[in-house]
Image 1: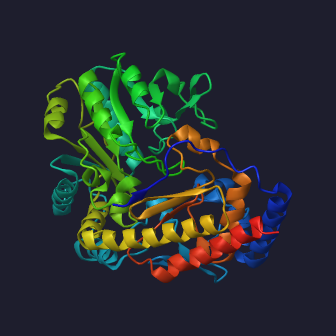
Image 2: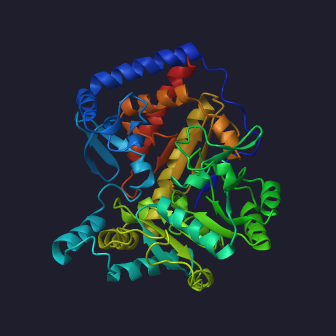
Length: 466
C-alpha cells in the first residue's frame, strides 16, 4: 500500500484563479462537449419521457458537461460512448469496476452459473458462498461473513445488530465520511455542532438524534463523544475517500481501537473504497483490528454484492439473543442478498482478478499517476495537492492535503472541478464525477496514465498561463 500526503495546515481554495477566465474556459469546454456528443445528448433528452431525471439512477446526472455520456461498450480500463468516442476510464463505476470492465474470469463464472448450472435467485446457498467467505477471511482476518447486494445494506444491517448487542441507541461517524445511503451517517459538523448534511433528502429523523460525529483524525473528540456511553458502534472509513482522500495521522487507528474497547463500542471498518490499499484493504495493510469489516462494489467484478464480516466472538453474542429475529422479520437480510450469481462472480473476481499481483500492478500505476500530477502542480506552482491510497489517487484544490473531512469540504471548488472534468472528458479521460478521484484496474496501462497527465497539464497550463 502506498499512501502519501503533506503535513497539516491546509490552505483555503486558491483565490489567485482568474474566475472570469475559468468561466470562459468552462463554457468553451461545455460547448465542445455538447457539439461532440449529439447522440448522448439525444439519448438523455429522450430518456426523460420514462426515466426520472432522464437517467436510470439519479447520481448519473452528476455530469460536468451538462448531460451524461451514454455508454455503448466497456472493456478493461476503457469505455466507448454512443458517439463512438473512446475514453480511459479512471472512474471505474465509482469503484464498482475496480476489477476492470468485464474481466474474463468473472464473465466466465457468470456464464457458467447462468448457462451451465442455472439459476441466480433461488434464496438457497451454493458452494461459492463458503469459498468467498474463506477468501475474505484470508484477506481480512478470521471472521464469519454474510452477504448483501450493496455495502449500504451491509452497513445498515451491522448497525442494527450493534444496537441489538450493546443496548445502545447511537452510532458515531466521521464528518464527511462515506457509507452509502445509510440514514444515520448523513451528518456533518457545522460551525455550531452536528447538523444534517446539506441536501439530505427526506430524513425520517434528524440524524443528529441518532449519531455522534467527529472530525477524522481528532482523537480528543473521539474520546469525548464515546465517553457518554451511548454509542453502539463507530462506523469508520480507515481513510476518508468521498470528500477527497484524507489519510489517518500516525497513531489515529490505534487510539480509535483503544477508545472503542474502553467505552464498550463496536468498531466497524468500512473498506468499500479503501480496498484500493491492497488485497485486504487498510485492515490488512495497516494491521487494524475491527470488530466488523464491511465491503461492497468491487469484489463482484461489476456484479452487485456487499458483505460484512464479524469476529466469531461478536457473532456468538448476536446469535445468543433469542429475542432477535435474524431469519425473517428482524430487519437484517434481503431476498436477493447472497444470491448465486453474486457469489459466483465474487469467487472468480477474488481468486483470479483482484489478486496480490494485480494490486501490486495497480498501485504502481497509481504511483505513476500521482507523480505525474505532482509534477504538473510543481511546474506551474499551483497550490493544490495529490494523495495516493494504493491503487487510488486524488487531487485536491488545497495545500497541504487536508487532514479532516471539514477541511477537505472547504477546499471544494465546483466551477474548477467542472472545468477539469469536462476538459479531461473532451481529451478522452474520465475521472470519478463526484470528485477528482482516479482508480486503477488490472487493465490500466502506463499509456493510460500518461494520457491523463498530458490532458491535466494542458488544462492547468491554459488556466494559469496568460
